[in-house]
Length: 120
Image 1 (spheres, rainbow, N blue to C red):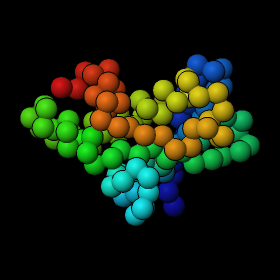
Image 2: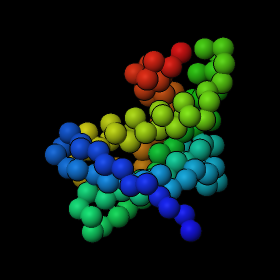
Image 3: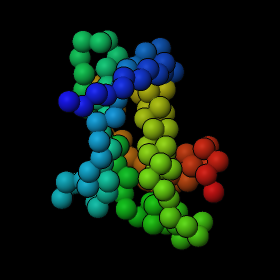
Image 4: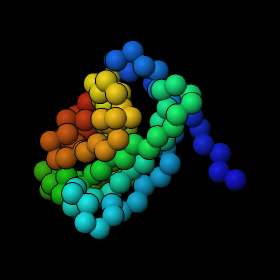
C-alpha cells in the first residue's frame, strides 16, 4: 500500500490547498508541450473534490539550462522547480480546478524559479 503525505499550502487567492505528489512520467505522445516530463499532483481546496494538476517540463528547458550553467539539473532541483510552479499557480490562479490543471515550466520559468531557489 502506498502512503502519500498530504501537504498544505495557503494560496494568494485565499484558498487553503491540500496536495500530494502522485508521480512523474514522460508526457503522452502528441501532447502540445512536445517531448516533456509530466509531474502529477492531486489537489483539493475543499477536502471534498480532488483533481489532478499536471506540470510539464519540456526537454528543451533543462537541456538549455545545462548548457548555460555547465551541468545538468539533479532530479531534486527539477522537482523543486515544479513545486515552485505549483505554488505560483496556487497564488495566482483564482479557480485551480477550472484554469490551473495544466501548467508549464518552460525555459524562462525554469531559470526564474531556480534563481529563486538559488540553484546555479
